[in-house]
Image (cartoon, rainbow, N blue to C red):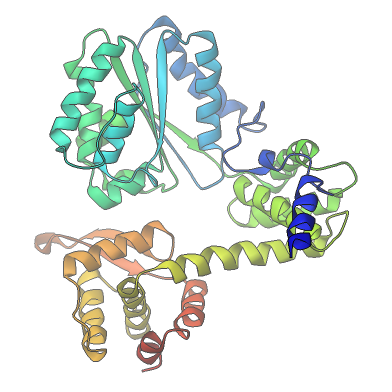
Length: 397
């Protein structure tokens, strides 16, 4: 049996195809960012005042997934930091991982070497500690909040309001926020006061076209893959497939990486076009299926309620989803969860991309969410629920 493991280790250590796989990872920041020169120039122009120890404007950056928003932000800040590390420091937080106001404030504080307990302190107390920490820094702090829409959709914009007002409590130290989002409608969720403060400067990142994606891939694979292991046709195919999905460079990089992994697992020395199509299917299938299978039971039941509800009507709002969900729970002999929790689940399903939940204003009835779902997700759900007897009975009933 140890021979099997030895063989796996040997193949991993002596890859036929990869030179440096990390170059194809989404969090890798290359030394150059082709086709984002204008965005680098604009963001650099806004942030260069850091070198004069002057607080730059808050910046709101938006664009679809894989358009270079995070990479450009890190690239510009790293470049400026090399030239003026004493004038500012920057803190990067992905709010999909640090997805509560408490965790965001704690993460900022902990960059100064202080420890914050996981729970047990009020958000107000954490904010007071943050103000104290920023004062002691005696320099400008640039806070990058990536996927900023995640925390707002779950918890509202109170933490953003506090952070955009922090400079009113500071003198020598200052605080600047860079907010990054994939949701171009995100600003509609914000209180007007937060919107005006956070959006002092706005940058829009357009999708890459197929030619630009091909150029990006060509540069990356020269570092990532061994010579002779890929053809220009393979690169062109990966670029073309990614261009169809709103010009997503991240998807293009995933495609070439997974294609190489598939080729290597098959004992090949070169990536074929068939490997790219297999990679595309594997990436999409794995992403949706893994998310669906990992959902708690009641989240799956809410998802089924949405799908079945939309089979009967064109539009579905949160309250209607809850009514359908309660009927299903009762049919299964289960105690239903609260409407508040179902509303939270709808937000969570929206955040992972399984549904689209749009805030609508119903006048005197207040705000609610209108829920829609794609046929592709519906088909994926159908394949997953058949493995659960209870869910399958609801689905077929």
